[in-house]
Image (cartoon, rainbow, N blue to C red):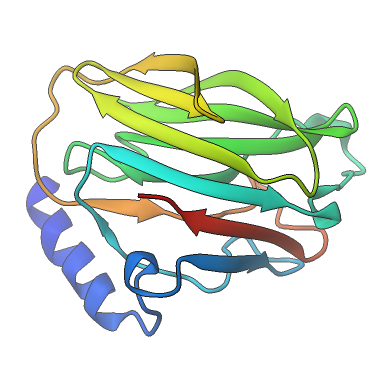
Length: 189
């Protein structure tokens, strides 16, 4: 499967009509349209670092209620990266969020050897900019929020170097966005 991965990503990158985030403006407003999962603009970009830092701001559009309350704990994805030259459902690290208890709750959301791992990090406020950082450090992913180390998740021991890719905002689980959701993201070096 990994032999097919590199050509697949290369085709996606060449076919993309959006500029990669790091080559475009330093800040982007991502919109997940009602009834959709993926954010616009939809970007395709490789990730060649062991560290991802960005600022994100959620506005009032991050509030939602599903009629089936069991779906309310489904995690929406903020940002992250695939790892170990594999697909993101095999190995990846990213921040996730959900609207629950009348607040935005932030999580570490990883796949390690195709097993999903979720860990609660902290709540954040609407209309407030927060600094998010993920560091792939040896045998773990370390998650920081506003400069403070929050959680770590064990990383696969069979990780190989190669091509990884960025993971951008995505709504769901299984349910698409019930209305337009806006998230402002600014990359930080």
